[in-house]
Amino acid sequence: MEHITHLGVVPLPGAPSRVPLSINLHVGPRATTTTGLAHAAALGRPEYLAITVVGEINGHTVDLGVRAEADLDSLPTTIEELAATEPVAGLIADFGHRLAEATWYLTVSGLAYDDRIVAGLTADDVDFLRHCLTNLERHWWEGIDAANAGAAQPQRDTPPSPGFLNIEPTPSAYQGIARLAGTELTRIMDYRKRLDRLLDLTRQTTSDDADDHGQPQ
Image (tube, rainbow, N blue to C red; front, side, top):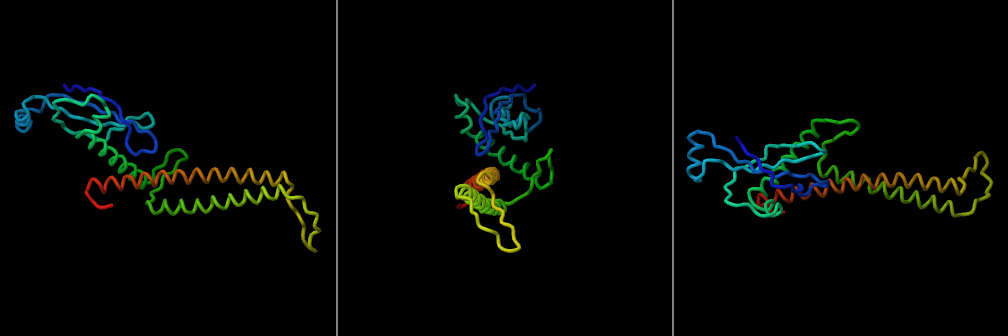
């Protein structure tokens, strides 16, 4: 029978929101195969030791099969030291990569939940959308400035041109326009911040992959 010992919890590195990872030690008898017995003889012990990493997202356990047999004579005294030690550090990185791959697969499959729709976008796509939102943000700032200026200036008593109506908002109406524009501006700024976080995470992941493969950045 396999015995499982919970060693501690660490956050998934680089995640924009906290994704706790549970680090567990598994101890159990080896399979009585020729390979298993030979491996046990080489290590000098009949049981196997394995480390697993399991995540939790929105209260749901996420087991992506991240597991590695470990030849450990002793364990670090803190979970932080353990997380920085191989094979645990590699398993944590592997969990992050598998989670990213699973997320991408679910995204490009067009899955949606309730009113949330996912879309498969490249980093260039997200960067372009962020550029568009930045321009839109500037537009709303200009609208707010114009409305505030209109609220502050005296009402003009200029007769309309022939065939036209001269309708100008009152100061309170200008203030209402500024408030509405401010609401839209807040919404746009929130969208842009979300895209900023996505781009930062993508670039960090790309940089980590380059480091893992020894590629120049």
